[in-house]
Length: 118
Image 1 (spheres, rainbow, N blue to C red):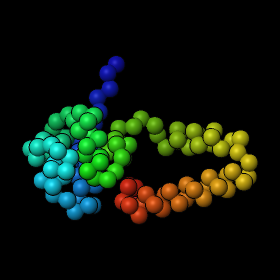
Image 2: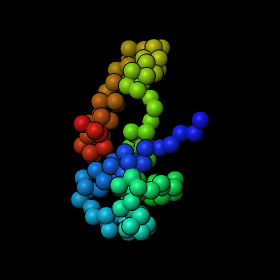
Image 3: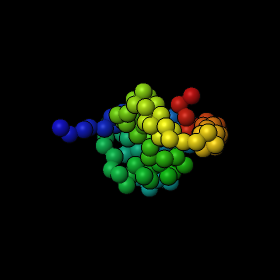
Image 4: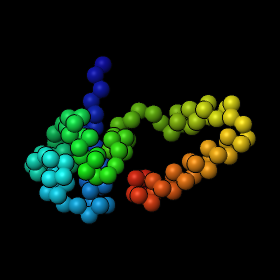
């Protein structure tokens, strides 16, 4: 069975990030080196975008491909919590402290940079 990405959600996330950065479609298309009509179709979910194009857009938006694709990732929050529990199951209290502090700083940084959905 072939998986089809949700191009509409990718386009919406690209638009959201572009607006956060106060960029026009024209500026984004120039920086990403793609045509403005193509950029418009991408943001509206009316066209597929190649991996090189996705990477160029992510770089132009100073974000990650993961961020742009996050609505297409199949793992649910409970699945991620189970994975985290598994990762932490053999940690010492000191390791858990350092990991928790690191994750808190990362979360704050993501939110400060506008890379979080919150």
